[in-house]
Length: 99
Image (cartoon, rainbow, N blue to C red; front, side):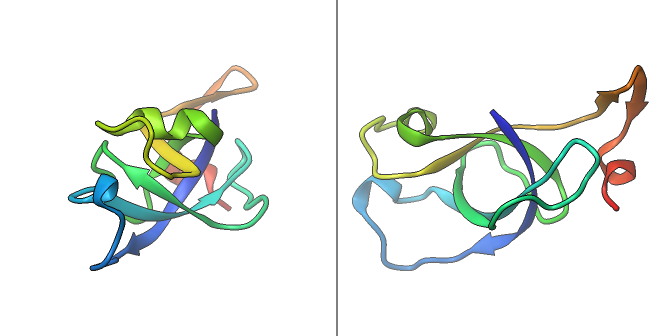
C-alpha cells in the first residue's frame, strides 16, 4: 500500500459497465513527510473521500478487489483514509504532514 493526497475528482459520463456508479479520484502519491512523489494517477473510490484528504491505496491486480466486480479494469483503488501518521515516534495529522 502507498499513501497519496486526493487532488480532485474525475468525472466520466461514459465508462465501462463495471465502473458504473463508482467514484474516480485524481490522487498524488506522497512520502510520509508530505512531499509529492511520482506522477498523479486516477483511483477508484469506494471509501468516499474528497479533495485534500490523505488516503492509502493499492495498485495492480489487487485494485480491482475494491469493487463489486473484482475483474474490473482498474490500476489503483483507494482502501482507506489516513487519520494520523506515526513519524519518528511522533503523531502527525495529515494536514500537518504536507509541506
